[in-house]
Image 1 (cartoon, rainbow, N blue to C red):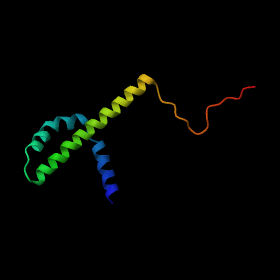
Image 2: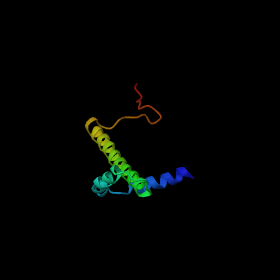
Image 3: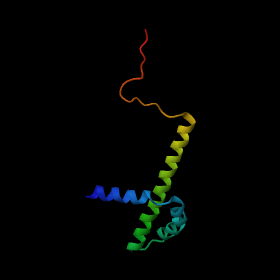
Image 4: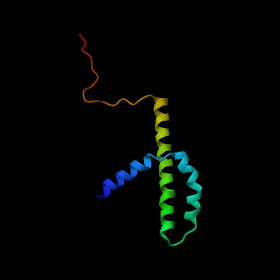
Length: 87
């Protein structure tokens, strides 16, 4: 039950726009830094880390794309080796 709920949550988060999330980063950073023992503070912390997670994921994704463009696609074996018959 927990895994499907997390999967649905991840799907929804992946649908969010990083630019829109980044515009909220400072707001939730400030709320998080001003501790108060409340559910609202707890939610602010979670939101702040969700924003950071999306930013980190996009950074890693873009770095990997850049690396592939520079080095070319990696060749991975797909079962049988690429052989030719030589006579």
